[in-house]
Length: 83
Image (cartoon, rainbow, N blue to C red; front, side):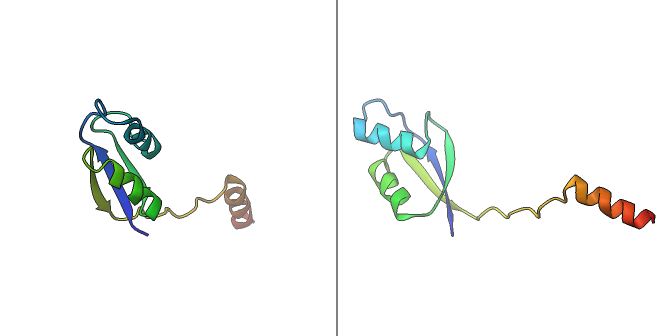
């Protein structure tokens, strides 16, 4: 699924209450604040309400790191190797 980077580029001063609530719901508190969200119908609807206040870019999804080995597992493997 694609990710969207949303950046607030204009002030919320003079905006309607509904637009301010949409900015809050998106997680944007001030000018030049950026957030990343999954590309969904709900997020696109919020963006449509405040499109004159934000800039939207599509970014590549973040790769998940491989899970780290737990300390107990590492100690057990070391003990087995020592035997």
